[in-house]
Length: 535
Image 1 (cartoon, rainbow, N blue to C red):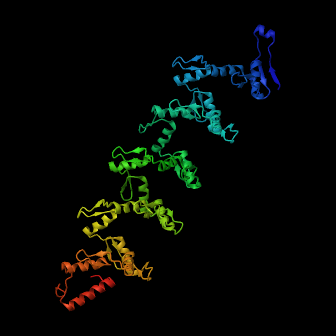
Image 2 (cartoon, rainbow, N blue to C red):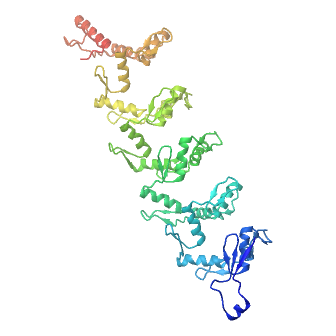
Image 3 (cartoon, rainbow, N blue to C red):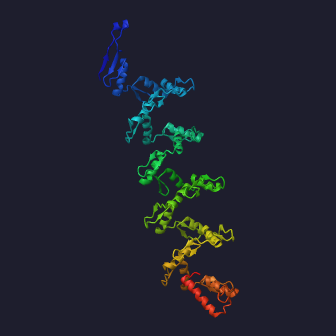
């Protein structure tokens, strides 16, 4: 490479102190940069040639300048000759000390021409400028990913090499960057140096504070290109995108079930380990995840923080409010692929699918009976334990299920909320209405496998089958006579008690001696029973 010298001074000029209008300069032929001294030009030329003639004897690292090698040697010797007069911190170079002093003075001499942001270091300004230019000059040789600064590239390279040079002195956990180690150390010290100006909540990480601030501003800068959903955090957007791609990168090593997020996998693993690390301090009940504990605590406090704007109903959990809102919008987003039936809740769809697959994953340990729903198994278990936790406040009668108690309460209130659309007859229970509707439709869905007789209800089919089996499960306590129908037993019992509950409306005779009235009453009763005649 050629170099050009400009206006070299003569000895006479030096003696008399005379000089040209422009200083004596040495010009680089590669980039036209000019230098006052030839040695400076020589050093500069190495930036073009890549020559590094100075080598470290300790680690063989090479340098283009001797002064840089000397500075580097201090990393091996530990020498830090430059001391801060304010905080006594020591540095390997005078430049580092000079930069450090600005943390005390607050001086920021380097200003961005684009956005006027100021910086204490020139290198930081240069890195910042790349946010405006989009320049990413540092490329990873492994995966071709590009970075705006060298330090980020170096940290990224460790994802390929697996190197984690920064070790926690407390728990020995290792990290790829010193920044990650610093953040981690706060989990031991409890330090939370970043405080929210709105609500005074404190955080151990600046990034967490920035994310938290969006709860006040409502900002959600990360938008899904598929469905338009906006997220406060980039990580949340990435997780959300998996709902579109179907990607589930986290697999359970026990049952091979896969999850979209690592936290979901961690929670799932507790179903195998039985671990329940979150404990209620009121009733000592334990939970596998923190949100379950938070929801549970509201059963003690009575708190219902989620309010429906349509009807004012309140809920303990946001998910329950969202499901409830669908009762107003009539939205049913979950569709069965077999029969196209739609559901408001995903759990309801899962339960429904078992009606197609026949799956009954919940098994009774006492009698091996299987159920498609856990709630049904719990209710069934009470037939073994005899437990009846639901008690009527009117008559103290107890029930195994809450819906049984609710239905029973209508016998006291007289409420009949279920109305037949054909004849306007009302019923206290939905199942009674369903049975009644079969009178209008003529539907008899239950068939006897012996004689092919069809019945409108399964209970009627069971009673009919006793005509084939000869079973008589209803026994009189007085004379041991047995009956196949409960109603037959009730009628028989009146022969012992002498009870005559039916009185003739024509002659007020209850003895049964009025033959004409007896025939008329029996015919009326049969007509009412057969044709469902109402008075």
